[in-house]
Amino acid sequence: MLTIIGCGNLNRSDDGVGVLIAQRLQQYLTENPVPDVRVFDCGTAGIDVMFQARGSRELIIIDASQTSSDPGAVYEVPGAVLEQLPQPSYNLHDFRWDHAIAAGRKIFKDTFPTQVTVYLIEAETLDFGWTLSPAVEAAAEKVLQTIIQQVENRIVSGKDAEKVLAHGTHASRQNAGLHCNG
Image (cartoon, rainbow, N blue to C red; front, side, top):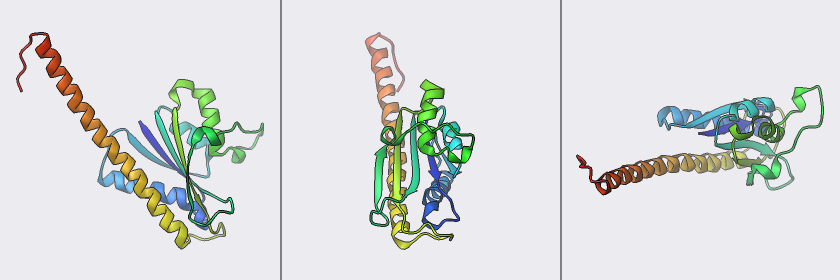
């Protein structure tokens, strides 16, 4: 199972890029269903990331970043580099997706994704607003196409695996002296 999660705040211009990509992926998967792939819009609720990722083998998180890089720069980072346990707090608003990765591994152990990839898109503005800046909109399209390609590659890999299994089963039957139809 591959889980894809978009994070961010749609009311803060470029901060909503992860959520917008997740919504576009949901639309894509509605039109082009792929088994074992699911997409969630977790907004700003880091704790939701932990629970939605549970039970998946792979996890992709998409969010905006603000590191003083060029607007629209895209970083693909292994989740292990970014994960960190949260500081003790009574406020769930302080629990972010990087905390969710670390806490999910600790709490859910084998049922939490082992392969985590994070796409960070450098924001130009985090001011109030509902639209993306042109640089972030272009970056969003690149990340969307990259993830769609990964999803489509899963389909090809699955079909190849079915052919290998079918061939292996056919060959195994022949080696065992069994007759096969087809």
